[in-house]
Image 1 (tube, rainbow, N blue to C red):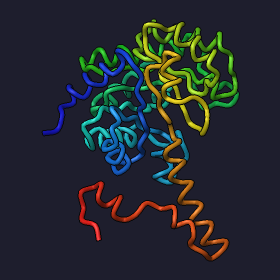
Image 2: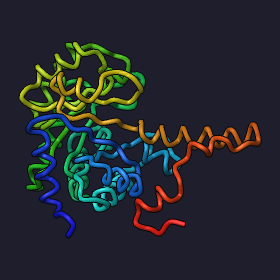
Image 3: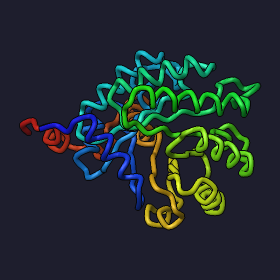
Length: 276
């Protein structure tokens, strides 16, 4: 019997109490089901991965379409899902709160709100407004009376402003505004990671790992990180295989790249179908 939304949310919150877990990012129901069968304890959506699957760039889809997608992901498996809710699909706190209410209704167990504006001239929301947006998101979740975690994201490293002090200031303020978990995608050095973990303790920290190399899961756990997500990296890995095979056909007229493909039996069998 499928787990209830309430149980999935309770399971998700408990994962944040101790230890370190990897939370991979599927972009559709199929990838969610495959990941759920591999021993992971939770999933997270990826705004980029989903947008690309619809033929659109990242941050280019409306909240209604995102919520439909989140509902499908949440219903696909018994694993809790953390929603990449971008910047809340609005600038003002009131509309962000309304959109968060829509997000909660999809059945997700967590909602991430970031502070990037999408405006190259002013890439981050002004500090006070960013905090107000986080506080409004918290109020919306509390008003829903649902056990949904709020993740506060500071995008300073991703937008080319790797200022550790300013990043920590924002993350601490987001924690004070009600964020349950803190996240600064783009941080890479052990010193920066440990400093952020200590600054927001005892609240948990999410670390993004989106490229090859770097620290292992065990080494990241030793830094005090509670959870590790991969953003759009798994979608990029899938697209990478697709593009390599397509380019070889288009440019060389050969099909050797298919040697690296998963077999029909491997994939079809994962979905419970017969294999031939």
